[in-house]
Amino acid sequence: MRSKAEGRKQKAEGGKGRRDVSVARRAAFQILRRVEEDGAYAAVLLAASDDEMRADDRALCYELVLGTLRWQLWLDALIEHYAKRRAESLDAPVRRALRLGLYQLRFLSRIPASAIVNESVNLAYLSRLRSAASFINAVLRRATREPEYDPAKSVFEPVERLAIETSHPVWLLERWIDAFGIEEASALARANNAAPPIAFRVITNRVSKKEILEELRAAGGVLVSSEVAPNAWRIEGAGALQRQLVREGKIYLQDEASQLVAHVLDAQAGERVLDVCAAPGSKTTHVASRTPDLSLIVAGDLHEHRLRTVMEAGERQAIKTLQAMVHNAENALPFTENSFDRVLVDAPCTGTGTLRRNPEIRWRISN
Image 1 (tube, rainbow, N blue to C red):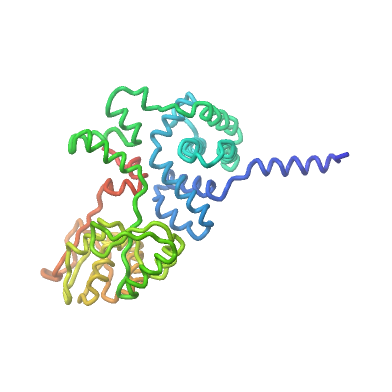
Image 2: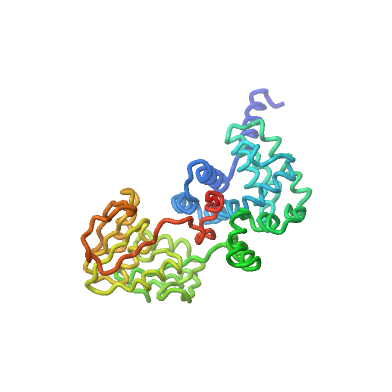
């Protein structure tokens, strides 16, 4: 016969088990919290967590974070249907747990629904919201009973319907429609919800491009030469080797359009170059590595801590001609006339051109 002590131990262990949350879901939940509450960027937080997770956990965490952010408006419409409450009326941790759970139920069919519901409920316990556990359970179980519900079908105003279908703010779609027409705006919004390709350049002043490409292919990477920027490459696979080569300063991950800038600037040997708004340094270091015999390249930025990022990137890429200067580009710059042969100004903007890679931006900017 089982003793009371054994019964309590088994109950406690069972209770603890019921509160388990996978590494990937726990990390995704915390990253989404920081994105929402601290204004952090998901890509930065995901990159910082790379070495803390196994490859499969890392892949799931990326999928959960970026997918939930991309489809946030659509997921909130689902919440309002299944919960019969406005999404913004819910406590933030409850809303995040429901978004994560619904994203998995709708987009990740390989994960059993029971596991999704259970771990979403456990996120409430981790957030010390025990009272919300039954609510999350009820909402997600209703979602499993109505798997085909589409919140956009009940909306008849065309732009509002497109906003829910593509999970974009109405005002942003209206601006795109005015500029490009409804078909182009719709295509643009839908493209924003697709995972962006990974592009990189080889740091050829440190390593042989041929050897690096062969190494990536040998590790299972599928490489395609860019049609946008010279000497840029797209890659699928070989994720572990990619991260290693980035840490070693042998490749640099950079979007193809961003890589095109250095070629357009076309700095020549012996010239002096100023990058007015340099951080985080992708374009600055590309200009310098593309023309290693520049006389000087100055990286300017308003914030000293952001310039440290630029200088660290330059150090990893073995750039010798790079100097940094804190300045406010809204005022007169502290240089005499004709100090530079070429000047690059990539001024701060809304960032809508990077929505595919930084989906949280669409929820931060306003009309």
